[in-house]
Image (cartoon, rainbow, N blue to C red; front, side):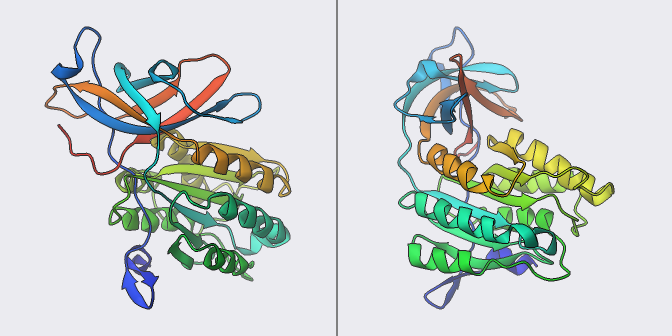
Amino acid sequence: MRDLAIRLLTGGAIAFILAGLSAPSAALLPGLSAAQGNERIAYASAWDARTRAPLTGLGPDAFVVREDNARREVLRVTAATSPLAIAILVDNTQAAHDHIAEIRRALTSFVRALHGIGPVAIVGVADRPTILRNYTTDQKQLAQGVGKIFAMPDSGATLLDAIVETSNGLRRREEDRAAMVVVTTENIEFSTRHYTDVLEALAGGGAMLHAVVLTTPGGAALNDAARHRGIVLDRGPKDSGGTRIDVLASQAFDTRLTELAAILKSQHRIVYARPESLIPPNALVISSAKPDVEASGGAARGQKAR
């Protein structure tokens, strides 16, 4: 399974799979000037809390940046223009059989809406993580990858394995921002990973985790694997600066993924200041400073601790 983290077919050659975001952006304590701190970079999106319409052209007064709950000074905010690598982890298990047509339809619209933002990869999670399409910006190849999504008979999910292997691959990519998008039903989890190991790998890969989950009454199993999966799908988006979206019907996948594509394409690049410190912060949280607006984001990948 570790082969998933190091395989990416590009014109027949083997390269690395899956892209990465960066380390946390910098900060400044009240009363310190930017010159006294280190400038750090983060990426964030903001959207209308009611309509989920993305907001663009925002300034430093629109975002609140905290490291370990200490507020930092936002110095500059501009539109994000660097490539955003996106890994789509899709449920193609037996449990998704009745929803596969809707999942394929939603992902067809999703990858089309992502055109121009950066390379996209598609990974199935049935039985073991399987590359359905390696990172590419070619819309025809992505459409072919979506066309490979079928429910595998008698299969269960290895979503936690897929998150770890994808995150390990992201470490090897050069993009300074990335996202991991999980499209899944509630499912039987075959991975034996502990949630702490999965969250650690996710942080190391630097991707913002966005989970779109079809929830059904009694749909989740009550065992250790299900518990670890549930924690990752809850804490992963929060810790990484992503989002979790629950849907009650598979027909809603299309709308929610279209909204998510617009949010991803409207990211802002935030420069903030961090005071000199021997101990780097553990957590970066980006939120909105404006009422009726929601925001989330994470650190740019590849920044060295200062």
